[in-house]
Image 1 (spheres, rainbow, N blue to C red):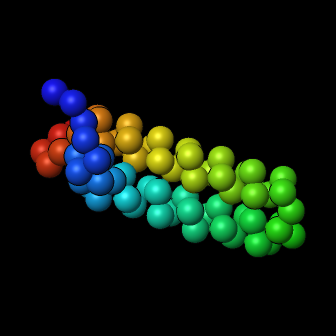
Image 2 (image 1 turned 90 degrees about the vertical axis):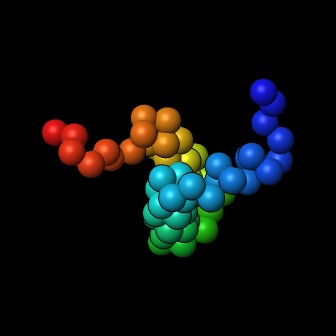
Length: 70
């Protein structure tokens, strides 16, 4: 079973991935603008976005929060 572009786009629209990615993008933009728009702050902002994407992917693979789970 191979992944094609449609599967990849469908995976990106999963709420468990989109929410952490959007939150990390907002935080990354805040870091970038409030630290003076330097290349170093752009690298830090990019790193924050990558971490948010990784958190979303892990959350999606783990199954997110399941109702009734303690």
